[in-house]
Amino acid sequence: MNAIGFVFCVLTILSIEAILSFEKQVSAHRLRSSYVGHAAANRQILDQITSRFYASLKQPSSSDDQEEKIAEEPQNPISLPPPPLINPHCARINLFPLIKIDVKEEPYLYETAAKLLRIFYGKALFDHRERAEYKFLDALLKEVRHQIVQEKFSVPEKVSFKDPHFQMIYYKMLKGTKKNDLLQEMGYPSLLDYIKIENAPSRICLCHAHPNLLAVLFTPKGAAKLYAAMHTPKAPLISQESIERICQEVHAPLLNPKIFDLIEISQGRHSSASKDTLFGEDLDNHISLRKVVAIHHLEKNN
Image (cartoon, rainbow, N blue to C red; front, side):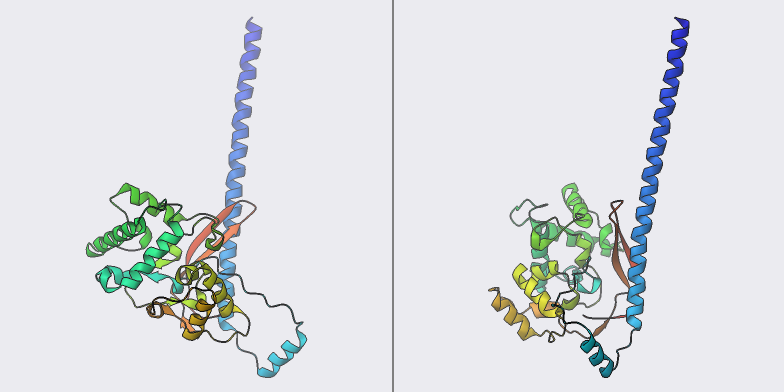
């Protein structure tokens, strides 16, 4: 009996050591996968920064060189560039006017912000409750205004709500879903990619805007056609008249001319924001990474 007990104890100890060793190996594998995934995502973001820098240094080639290139290049079917992974800083809705003054003085901006909340999050987070987006927007503006008065406001993601229900909704808005496509009714994006709160005059840069934001402003059908009109190679410059015509063609006429006070349709150069959000992803290890980086050059609208 003693021998059997001794053997049983030894086997138990060996089993426990084997389990602990296996758990250490699994933990080490997870740690390595996480490290490799973050390194790959960081490398993607670094590549984007480098590409932006070198793109800003490019000089336009002479007309003769351009004609020669066009003659040599095969005539491929026209393809549109893919939309940006993240709606850029220059194309975000600035909510600061709604905080600085009464919302009744900026009714169109207020309605546009509420419409964005309703379209992006109405089904997933508001459960289609009547005027839920207005109640949340009012609460958000109130909290930001309070923090500004207390000199505690820094960035939108640090806003906190007294109402835990609104706080949970806001957390989900800031996080967004990993996969989202408004035109395909899949998931919802991070609110940080579509709003900003800055004490400086700013308009939505239409040429850099993500189709999701265009869909809020011009309906999904109008967004698809407008994006194509702005980004087709050698397309004519977009104008107020062409925007109105496109909306008419998709049976979504502009009901309020105030929209042109909200957007910037110029396609020249504009100064890049001092900071921008870039996205990197490692599909093998299921790691995605967002980073706010400094940008120090001019970008040309496409």
